[in-house]
Amino acid sequence: MRLSDFEGRWRMSRTVRNTIGPDATFEGLSVFAPDPGGLILTETGEMRIEGQGPMRASRRYLWRETATGLEVFFEDGRFFHRVAGGDAPGTRHHCAPDIYEVAYDFSQWPLWSTAWRVTGPRKDYGMVARYAPVTGPT
Image 1 (cartoon, rainbow, N blue to C red):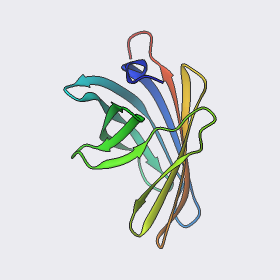
Image 2: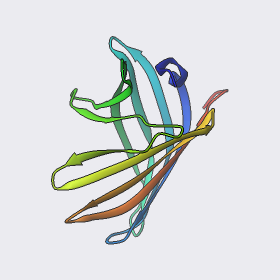
Image 3: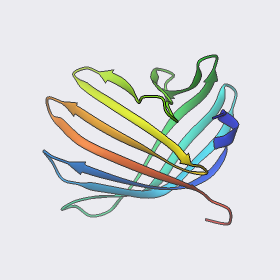
Image 4: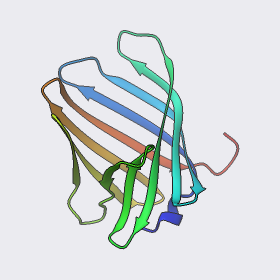
């Protein structure tokens, strides 16, 4: 995948299955927009946590194309993880004391997904996000 393949708007749906806390869903829009170093990803939408009312949520990441492939950084510039797809194994991010493991699936491009497994002393959940290109008004 090339970084330019992601530019634009994507409808996004995320589910969180939590073994030690409430489950959650997120429905919204992911926008990959150009910035000086590559693309900035802004996710906005509605989050629903089991047992609570809906709330607006958003987050941002920096996506960069490097000699080794695509890399994702936190908004403040700290490295997060590499984007692994195809037959490549997933990748992980250590955020002591927690471990975040992710696998990207581009096999149905332009539909794609991420599957996360997060474990730690106070975390134990799986999270799947599905993306589909937006071709008309949102």
